[in-house]
Image 1 (cartoon, one colour):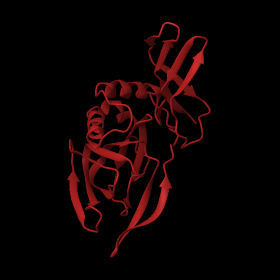
Image 2 (cartoon, one colour):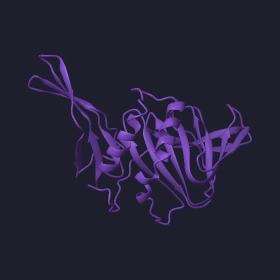
Image 3 (tube, one colour):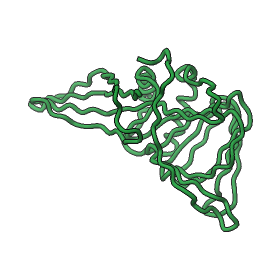
Image 4 (cartoon, helix red, strand yellow):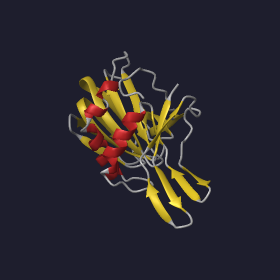
Amino acid sequence: MLLYHTKPIEIIDNANQTGLRQSDARVQWDSAPELGHELVGDTRKVNSMTITTEERTSETSGVLVEQLSQLLERLKLPDGRLSAGQLEDVARAVAQRPDLFEVLLDDDGSVHRSLLLLQTSSYEVKVLTWRGPQPVDWHDHGGSSGAMAMVGGWLNEQSRDGDGADLNSRRFGPGDSGSFGPDHLHDVNFEYGRPAISIHAYSPPLSGMTHYDRTRFGFVAREFIPEIIQPFTRASPLEI
């Protein structure tokens, strides 16, 4: 099992109070931390120097992590929680660069597949593929805000209107995007595509989702499913 992390390293000379930003150091963990464990930055002191690292996580490869990080640095995102609008900017930026993730989209027979492209302490980005209809799956996002941008194909979203049982409906096609806040509850399903491909961004990174049944009394919570990072096992030209 391999998980890949890049660590931008900032070295501060404690004596002279000067800083030097070094190039990213790539780290490959042959024995990754427990799946689902949140990875955060740390600060270490070495002699008179303070070294601060920010870990980035992916189910893909170190090369892709670096490419995505460089792409999203242009958005000048703030530290901490991102707004729904900022997440939509992230999703649209990644969706406009399919060359970065097309090689990962093998047809493994799954109707629906999700792959973590990049996760920082503030946000995460996933690519989802859709190859056919699924059962209705009403869910929230565990308090995270989110956004979706279409790369190809068509999806249909039904969402809860406010706190009631009424519904809103929207179709997403190539180039379309949308965002939502932490209270959003919806179901997204396949309409057309070979496959349909969408980019999703969440902040903070998903901790899990509560799934719901729609009843005559409104939406009733059924179960909470924690988010688990799955290892990427397919050999890829992007792997290092």
